[in-house]
Image (tube, rainbow, N blue to C red; front, side):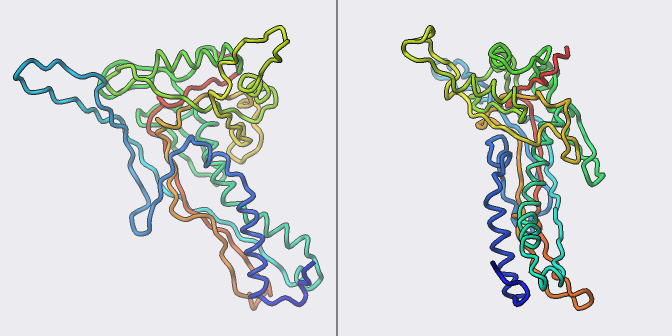
Length: 331
């Protein structure tokens, strides 16, 4: 155990950095690593916003008669949305009493908490993109109104999403919003087949590879049964193939079913959906990775104040890459 009553500020900074980095590396970053968001680096001196758009080529080639020039393929730009960076940060104080009265567990707890705070806020922000996906905005824990409408000015989950090159609309929210089951999953897959269009309203084939859920035990257990179940050779169902085995990666987020403050929200407990990592138009911009800010000693209080900082933003352009059910049985 380190004797804090004999440690200098430079030595303590080294200790703090070790604890900070360990907490940072131990945090799973579920949403960031889920495949739901396309990560985009944002370098210094390149502004605090990025505009993203969907662009589609028409699906089919045209006839070419002998001696004639080939037709020029149509290209249709879809809707756009803007990503804006937000800087996050928190400080903790290490008092002289903590350092001189051997309060090592208290100090370690503070430093490890600091090490994951910025990453946890990023995880919460990304989870709220799914958790608040039935709305076009919400007020976050800092009291700031966050606009989360997608490019067509609708909520992420809608029954009337628009495309730019046609009057046709599509839905990515399952009718009657059933809880997760084999039938509900097949219902979402039917939306893939019947309600996945390009900007010309042409049916396109998009690979869906993610099944995402909240951390609701019943929903998670159902997901595991669907994706992992198997039968013994001598069992009654021997020879029956589990068509969902290895079809989807199960992403479970503890923060989707939360309110703006990160407290449990039972209204969202049964949320689930499927998504395509290959076709995702959800973007995460990283300008400043989570890092520790080391201080000098405060001559007035004798406190050593450490900080964590990070700068990132996110946006979602379209809705065809994700299908959703709220699981509450509403029409």
